[in-house]
Length: 139
Length: 139
Length: 139
Image 1 (cartoon, chains in turn cyan, orange, blue):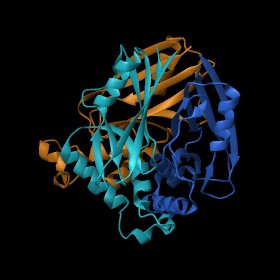
Image 2 (cartoon, helix red, strand yellow):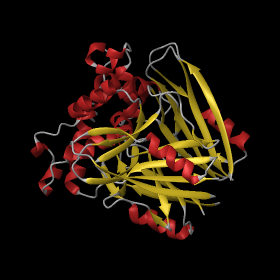
Image 3 (cartoon, rainbow over the protein chains, first blue to last red):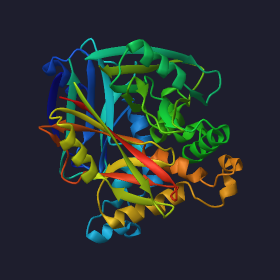
Image 4 (cartoon, each protein chain N blue to C red):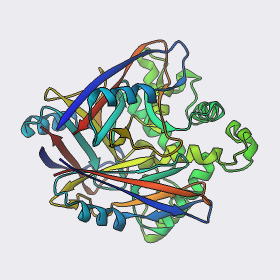
């Protein structure tokens, strides 16, 4: 069994953003030499997500508006978590809706994707250095 | 390490539906000959889900009504994504709540499930041909 | 390839609770002897979750209040699932928001975690014996 590990670092200036990280995952897959197996891609921070969906800017604005309705940033006093001095209570909730991780099949050395699948990093509490973990296992 | 791959194809006439695909996954597991490992089951399309829950029709109607409250189909103009000519903005949101994929343990050649766990394909934008990917790795 | 399996049993007296199970997963990892691979941790029951977030009690109260807004327990008659004699329709919905499972990378014999990542069992229908499955594969 082969394994491969890499961290991607981000420091997003905006509070919230969606970044297509598919090219970075594909590059890791090439580096790994794995032909059959799986790749795990996960946010290493708890106010961020990794998820798979469409690379369409209107959809990303829909996600942002929808997540703000489900778990609004303000008033920050509505979250007990913010009594710790943070203002990111909402980000911990948004991240649960969008998910922490994706697991993608590797077949013949490629991400085994449907036609529109793309991997995104979802930031919900920007302005901090954060990491995404890519872990590949297989042969 | 052994690996096994199969696609399941669906073309659901209704806009939304939940289909129990556990028997198909179990059949793949038998075909694969894997006794210890994991199976990844994921929607290859971004307006559909694969998830694990109970095979109870009342619950499925509850899921449908709840997802419609969280992310209503109409008015379709409420989603910027629909300016692309689609009317499935809601389906991209519903899929995030229900999830893209499940990873299930394989132990002694069987899906290592609790008493009520069943795997479902969740369709949120039917009337199109779509695929589910089953990828098994192990020994 | 090595594999390791263990069940954790819980019987939570409260209807809802979040339990940090990271120490138990780390102990399994040590027992397994796996240095490179992945660990799957999943609820074996369909009204419970396994998820990764922060071990902060204010946040856990925020999660509880938020999930009650998204899918209230009462009136129990609002869920068709409860016509089966159950009163846990809400718990099946809450579990979908928080997720069934996590997959964590194993690197150098340790859970490959960011600074705040902790694994939780989320109970949404307590007073019953329930299990969490830990499955490790790797080398």
